[in-house]
Length: 445
Image (tube, rainbow, N blue to C red; front, side):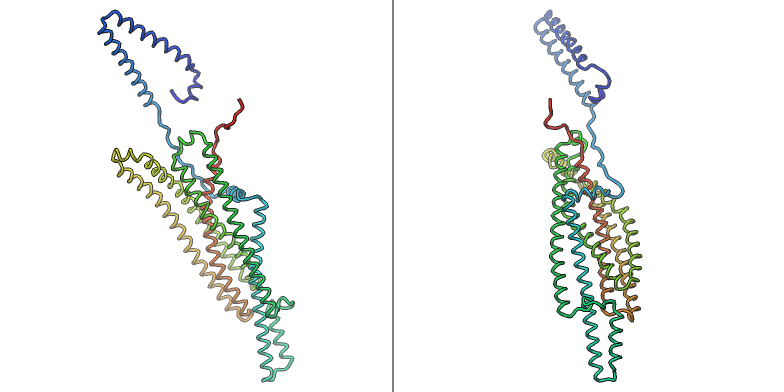
């Protein structure tokens, strides 16, 4: 017969066809009963019973034929996006966590925290350089009483010390001990306070965003038409509410927070390293280009593997939920072993995709570590080669900042790739929050 839409488009009058068939059936019944009245009572009863059996058999055969013709609706293949995650997904994720003012306030706290953190490092360098200068001046003054150093020679030494260092001239570039302690303490307390405000602000925003996206998806699911549930098994829906929401609640906020803090810290370190020796920025730029290229090469595979892992997880939930619903039937037909083997096959497919994702992540991390080791070696040899024109505090700041930069930078690149992989869960949740809806519950008749 076809679907209701196909029957409507064919132009057939179904109601008239049914009305035409009913009189024919009534005539057949009256004819059979009239023939039975001529015969004896026994034969009449037998003929009626036979006609009823025949009619019942014809009805049963027609119903069985209709059931054979009707096809069971098949499950649609789960959709899977390709390419990079759209910026609209990022914007919708943060926009669900608060208003634009809320986002601007979070940005301000992040910038202020990083300024205070980098300022404390810079102030520590100024303070260390001033203490080193006073120590060398004290040594020169002590040695002048035991040697033939004139006052002109003493002034030449102190002037050379001041001119070689970039921190000279103003009072804040040559602080005394107590001033250095006071200002450094204020900066450290400010870093602690604003970093706490930034952290609480961020995770509160992520929690609100996760709640809003979950509620939107739930409202979209309960208002979805029945065709959606016919084409999508229950395990596929449970996968979105279980694993995808779990990634959005637990893994994505921490990874995104690492990316934000590491990016701001890297900018501050680059500023300090460039202030000490601008030539050290050249290997940093070269290192950044290599990291970006490796990240692009890695994400082309890791992103699609992560999406594949998400889709291969749905059959596990589907098979498990179906087995629990029909557990009594499975035990009655003794099919436990067969269904256990099917579950193991579904789990093996998912485990293979998950193992592939872990392998690509480890490969990416190993190559980043080797690149960072090469960069630290270059910075160390550069500081040793420029030891005559650099103070001890400047060399220490450059080497320590380079080591911290490489460690954080490679972790930040890995976390940025992890953020893109975890954003596929947000992409899947947003996809189910925009399902076509049924008609409104309240309608005007």
